[in-house]
Amino acid sequence: MADMLTDNLDGSEPWHNGAPYVPTTIGHVPKCTQKAREFLKGFPAEERAAALRPFMIRYRLFPDNCKDVHTAPITIKELKGLVRVWKLHNQKGFWSDHTTREQIVLALYERMQYNYRQVREKRRRADEDRKRREALKHQDGPVLTEEEKA
Picture 1: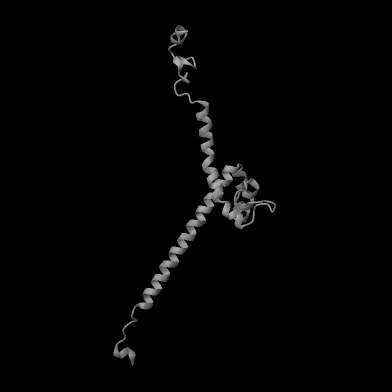
Picture 2 (picture 1 turned 90 degrees about the vertical axis):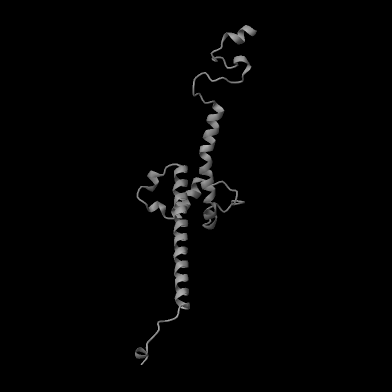
């Protein structure tokens, strides 16, 4: 038995010297690692889809028979509804360019980020205008000379 364990020292046997796993080729990635990477690839897409949920609730895109809209799964039907509400479907070739769920979620997420940037910029400009008006209000008016007063 001991000879069987020491006969193959190159690691080609899966149970070499009692080790649970020895890669047979350099750079080989175990199946469990491959599956974990695939799972993690989809995770950011699910977070993006979850970020879109408040808009789907606001526009009532979930079916009427949905018990809890806060935990309901986001299907392609709700995503397409949000695309239509935000009028992204009017872009030329939108549906041909965005054929998968992930692509639609990414397009909607980018639009959401764009909308947030626009709102922040609008608020920033409004605050600057308000501060400028208040500064002008508290500033003394132009001083008129005696000639101008007459």
